[in-house]
Length: 62
Image (cartoon, rainbow, N blue to C red; front, side, top):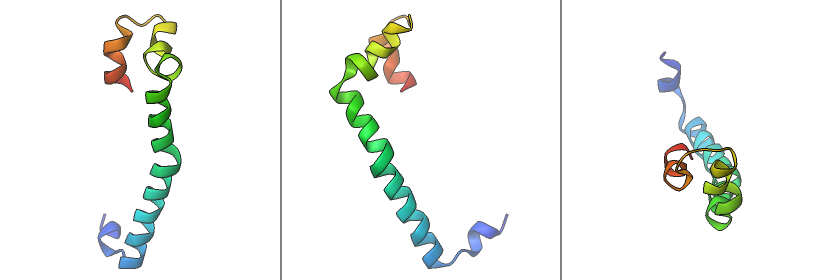
């Protein structure tokens, strides 16, 4: 339990750098694709699986 509190500044910087890299390499492009292609990756995907009110529910699930 005390291990996270005993990290050095260099370890903290490394964790922040890794999280930033993953966010920019994975999550940002995925979100951008959902905005650019909503019929494939957004509400259209939920409509294809038979979800009720896909335009509304996509904001809750995604």
